[in-house]
Image (cartoon, rainbow, N blue to C red):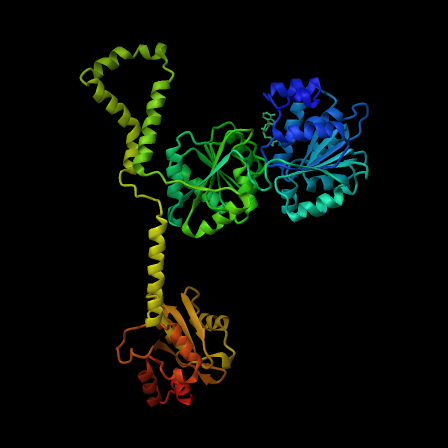
Length: 605
Ligand code: AMP
């Protein structure tokens, strides 16, 4: 392995990066730095976040700038404000001993006036998010006509965030002679298209296998019921008392809910998502960076640009829909050559998605057991004992109190004393976990259960039983009346003026329909349609019942299985079904109120 000196890095930059603790180049730097120092070339580098790519392009560019003029020579475009500030900070650090290397960050969500002022002073390097850059260019504050390098960082994210037009607009203002460097964690089709349209024979550099994720990350998953997701998260947090982790959720709401629950349960956690103001977001990120926070619950977008190296865990509260996102999430641990752990909390249904991710990443996920209550307690106990062993004792201040303390505890022997100290700290966990259930899902028994349930459901369907919370109503309207489910629901809403009515399965036949209604609303619906006509024809709405249940009194059997619906397609089978209130219909007939169109319907067939 080479040193930075051997790669050709000049002494002022060597001094600056030595101060940052960079001892040896990271793989992407080893590949990119010499190429950029020696050649004027386009370059595409496929590298994950955290692989050291900022220094890979930053160091050679800073070294090669022409400091005898005031032209802006480098334009770096990146997707988010956070990344923009991070790149600016990194480049400022690398160029610490090159005072002419002026760098301006241009990003949305901050005062445009300050940025105009900075640009007016002249910048060798502009680091920008595309939207704000476009804005400042239109207003005539950014001159990029002398740019020698255009660098697209996290190109895949920029495209994902819809910056394609801005990128086109900005790059069209740069000279044709400039070189384009494209850094991307992934290489979707769209990034390939960009590479082809903006570059000429680019040098291609790939760090690790395409889409492989960071090599030093181990991927684990916990299998639990969806309803236990949060409990599993708590177990993980309790099992790793020194956890320093980003917990990824899919939506802002979920992010806030999980963070709120953790805070309420006494964890050192907070939320990071797009509903927070910029100031709030920065505050949270700052607390997390300086480890005032142990757990950051975040959405994918909000966590972009958050540069933290020592995460113990990335936790996928649930798997992202997009495999690339998983790649991004897990790439946040195992950075800067450290090993990392990415864990996912899954339910059985998500296993398919896991298999897909495994295939794309070419990695096997290891199933981990959700720690039992006992295991958590044991871990916490020994963590506490370790703490006691290593604690900084302030002899000077404590010694003064000791005589009185010794006197007070005189009657307790050593073992009992230890027990009491341990209990003082530990009882909270013991209490919480005393009756804690096993949260692991046993796949085999679940599969068996699922098989049995399916068979039971099938049997129920075939035997004509269905959801006990619903009753099946007969409506004397069908395809012939141009009835569709929405129309039926609309009629029920109009007649009852009640939008809370639970409506379940709807089966529309040629001349009539069945519709499942929540039990508590059945009478309301039947009454609402009493005496109602539809297109001049009196409507019948009544409880329906399959053959074999005739005469079973008032009991509301609410089920019409598949065979029933199949039969209903054939006219002869219609006869096998009748409304529970057939006699009621007849009564009505007797009363001169012909509401038994269902009966008539069947007679006609
Ligand atoms: P990046 O991929 O540019 O976001 O870099 C990830 C992290 O690695 C940043 O915190 C850098 O400061 C750090 N880093 C970059 N290069 C080196 C190096 N050669 N040695 C140690 N750390 C580095």
